[in-house]
Image 1 (cartoon, rainbow, N blue to C red):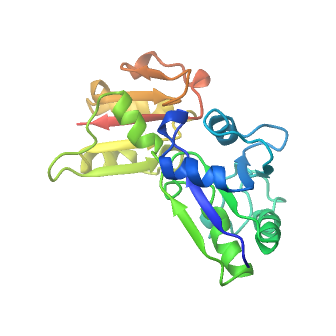
Image 2 (cartoon, one colour; image 1 turned 60 degrees about the vertical axis):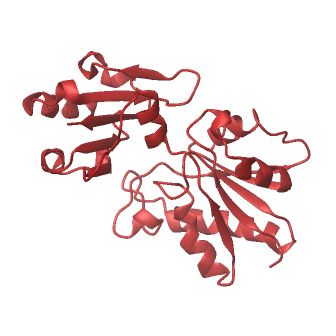
Length: 248
């Protein structure tokens, strides 16, 4: 194994938020691996990077990551999609891992691009265990990036926490008891709110917190929208890359 695998956080959407280290490693890597949510779709991560770095002469591996909820150990890619019981995610991660390892074994460095920061709800960690299982001596370096959480708070001019205040960061569509979380923490960041916004809005209104919530959609992208009054948002039109920050 002579190639180097670098997992690079490219930020939420603004190419100017790429770190200097991210840009250098992308330039140095002859192979880029980029995730995409639909097999027939294009990679958002790649469209961001190509605005900052020339991709001429690079091999591009487009890895399809099914956007499926998983059960059991599925949060790390083991199990089957709840929305499609016939979809074995482990087979998908195995296939992508073998593709990556085949390039590394030939001595090619690979930059795996992921939106935001690689350590926060990143697609890469669906692959991490499988890569190590197949190649135990594999060395992986992770390059942090600006997360959509930080970018959204910055764009909305919100402090996420001061002093001894408590912060909770949660995927809204997995929550069982949002009320308890809102009662316990000073700031609550709710990611992936596009399918549950109406439910969130109703609860915040009941708790008297509706005026403490801000929704940021597509932070750092050209079509970014900041909603100061979330009661005016139509859930069906809300983009997948949207989050609500409740600051008490």
